[in-house]
Length: 253
Image 1 (cartoon, one colour):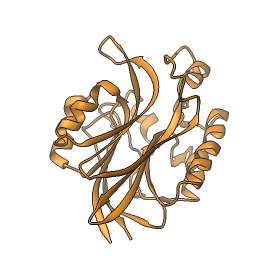
Image 2 (cartoon, rainbow, N blue to C red):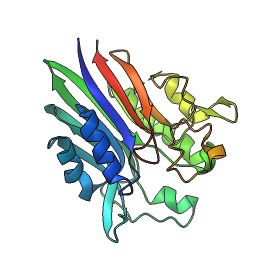
Image 3 (cartoon, rainbow, N blue to C red):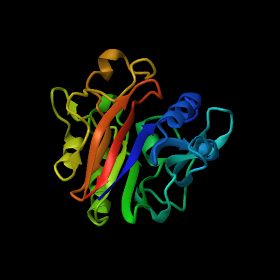
């Protein structure tokens, strides 16, 4: 049995890099999963973690908030040896990354790919399979047909992925309008939801664009495990980005 220190956070592109960098330096985790990561910022984040190894799954091209077009997606950083990695796309064509079009919900959906980035890392002779994803966005957290299509595809990928830890921004509240969220429940019915029930939202009230009323039931960031893993000491941290950062200790049984 072995354990690793772990962080997952949606960094909202380049908007909070100074805060993210400070947080990561203070936490010094062995594995970090990041969503909404621009490719140009990989080196900076790696440096904040002592020149950690990095893997990246691109989802789209978009303005990088500094006036340039850049690839954006999800990344995994680790100070541990990476023994294997994979990019498992469940929507879109990975050979055709497009410029993100924010005109409407339909264009947003059709101009980005979705996938799970998996890394296998090793500590004390034990291998850990860590994955991260950024799932389909919908207005105000309600499920729609786009999410219903994509959750089937995601679950299909996960069903062939063996034992793993999966974190990310799932854009699917655990509780929505007072009842279990439709999309979140499809994951939590199969995989263990490790976010303590005491957390009602994973949005940062000082930094997220949604009103405080809209944020109240948006527990949208997740940490799921299969039976070979446990997650303990799970804490959500404000003051890092527009989403809370998740810290945990991951143990391979």
